Image (tube, rainbow, N blue to C red):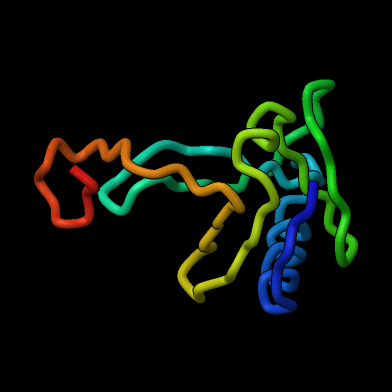
Length: 107
């Protein structure tokens, strides 16, 4: 498992960890579903499970379910200034959940 992220995202994630000292110190990357723009992924503070892979970079530890990693591949995280944009090596296509009500669907 490999996670790539710019220094700006590292700093924001470290700040989030310091503000949540009572929570887990590992950052879970996970498939969060489909929306108007297609598949999206998210991050959350979580404890490592037996079924997880981990990757450490810049003092941050990322975890991802082994099956999800095998399906989607390595992760890139970008801080947009309004949240994180998370992309994966094998980004899934389609699956839009908007029932054709928006222009971003691959229907």
